[in-house]
Structures are given as structure tokens and as C-alpha cells.
Amino acid sequence: MLCELTNIFHKRIEENRGYVMLDREGRNIDYLRVSLTENCNLRCIYCMPNEPCTSNTMTSLGVKDLNKIIRAFSVLGIKKVRFTGGEPLLFKELDKTIYNTSKVCNIDDIAITTNGMLLEQMATDLQKYGLKRVNLSLDTLDSKKFKLITRYGELSKVEAAINKCLSLGLDLKINTVLIKGINDNEIDDLINLTKILPITLRFIELMPIGEGEKFYKKGIITSKEVLENRLDLLPIAKIHNSTATLYKLPNSKGQVGFISPISCKFCNTCNRIRITSKGGIKPCLHSNQEIDLKPFLINDLTLVTAIRDVIYEKPKEHNLIASNYKSIKYMYQIGG
Image (tube, rainbow, N blue to C red; front, side, top):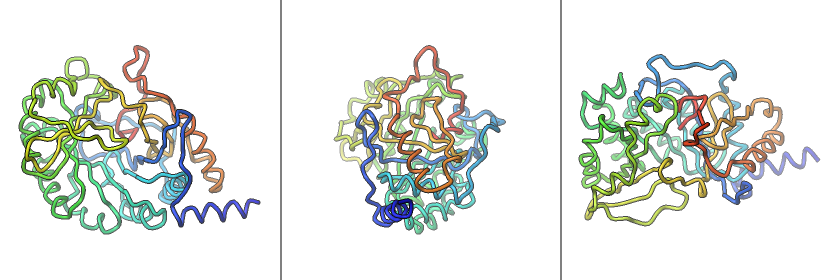
């Protein structure tokens, strides 16, 4: 019986058919976000303390175990994988991991979320291994303010990364976290990038997690506030299961998105599941629930069963703004 089930497991991997994985709310969970490392070469003021926190409760995954976990998710119907961090480009075997996800697990939709510091020189090779999409963080167009927000970053490197991605034809999204008193005076300039560049610029509401708590009460800018001042933004059809509501300036090459986890929950359509760099599976970004998958790595069937059970129990919605909620981890430890 075990041999027969193992053969079925490998056949599903080869065909990448898997069955549709529904949670108890009937949501189809087909999107996996994998945090590859807690390390980052920047220290953005709303994300990481200058000296990052460390946790010794779980040890980091090895590459073989990481690949095994991604393969198990592919059996369960995962169709898209996004690699995050920390900074995923610091992960030494990112190229091999992307290759494994694409060629071994037969997952075609592979993405990364990056700060862009190392992207210009790595993008060509990563695309060859299977990378299709890039989300790039950019909170300001001012080089001095960029240094202030990131503490160590260089705006010119992000600009070079944008040009490289566009030249390669990679699907490019720019992620911007708005904070009152820091970059709210650049909203128009950022939106105007979409007039000339074929990108999706996405404004993300600040979340009270980790360092973000220090800015949240006085710094939060809702999507509604931005839209009330830009009546020239025209709504366009929302992509299925997208976290962003999309708009477009007349005759622009790109589009503008708004991600509103605070002011407008999208939990009812959430199709995501997350793996931390230490091997924890998080059914919800904004939940303290996390199950260590390492004990289930003894064989493929045990691992698939454990993942399936966690997915089924995915929470109905997050409690991010509940009075008794407090995340025990920083965003870079979760993977965003």
C-alpha cells in the first residue's frame, strides 16, 4: 500500500495536476509564499530594527528539505510560488531552488519579492532558471530619503533593477508602503511612473507588525485617502484572487494597485499559505499560529498529510486590528 501511494505521489508531481486544495471555508489554496531567509542587506525603518531580532526556537531549513516541502505543496495543487525573505537574493542557492520549483515540481508561475539591491546582476540568470515575476520595494524617488528609510540602500540600484526587469520582459510590480510625514508627499510622483512604464505600482497600507507598530497610529494612510485625491484613477477589472484593487490613468502604460489589509480585508478570497525560513507553516500571515514541518519530513506521504491538515484549518480571517492581537514576530521573520 505504501509503495502504491508513493507511486501516485510521484506521478502527481510529474503531471503537476494535484487535486484542488480547499480549506474549511471553501477557498482554493493554490499560492505558496516561501521565506528563504530572515537576513536582509537593508534595515527599512518600518520593517526591521537596526539590529535584527533572532529566534532559536526553530532551526533553518536545508535546501533539500525546502525542495521536498515545495514538491509536497505541488502535489496539493499549488500553482504559484513566491520567494520572499528577509531578502531572498541573499539565499545562496536561490537559482537551484527556482530551477527545482520550475523543472522538478512543474510550477510555472514563480516570483520573488526583493529590495532590488542585487537584482540587476542576478535577474538574467534567475529568469533562465524559471523566474517570471518580480515585486520590487520602492518607497521613495528621493535618494536621500531612500537612504533614510532603508538605512543602507542606494536608490540607483533599484532604478537599475527596474530597467533590467523591463528589458528582460519580466512581470514587474513596484510595492510602496505609505507613511504620513515620510513619503506621502510623493504619491503623485509615484503614480505618474505608470504613465511611462509598463508596471503595476501598488500602495500597501502600513501594518502594525514589528517596527511598523511605531509608525502605525500616526502614520497609517488608507487606500481610500489616496483615491479621494486622485479622481483621475479609473477602476479596472480585478484579477481573480488578487489582493490589490486596480486602477489606471488614462492612456498610461502601467496601472496602480491598492492593497488594503487593514481598511478593507480580503480574507474571504485569500488563497495563500506561507512557509518560514525555519520550516514553519503559517496558514495566515497575521496569525500567531505556526506549525513546524520538520518532524513531518520523514517521508513524502506524512509531509503531504500534515500540510493538507494545516491548510484545511486555515483561519477564516485575520485579527490584525483586534485589541488583544500582538504579533510575536517581525514581518521579515514571517516572509510578508
